[in-house]
Length: 133
Image (cartoon, rainbow, N blue to C red):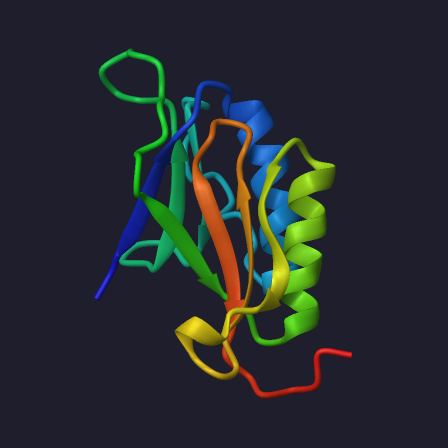
């Protein structure tokens, strides 16, 4: 369904370090030479996607996080969710909900929630019934 998801940033260098760290545990690498002018970066697969694109806004105004907006990344394991969450906190992100089961969304819905340094809300979720311990 999606080609890409775009998030704004005020600092592309900071965002690149953050997303390199948090997406690595989920198996997503940055697309090399995606943006030669240095105002954006992308992770996932090149066009037609899917990929996450992080960019300075084209209109020149400061980036801002959308209220009610969140990007969710699929994780293969609960350990990957844990690693995503830990990497986010270690690289300037903030906690929005520690990794754990959220049975209100399904019996094996295991997710961790963070905000990136620009305030964009993210999560990683694993639907596997593997043992959390």
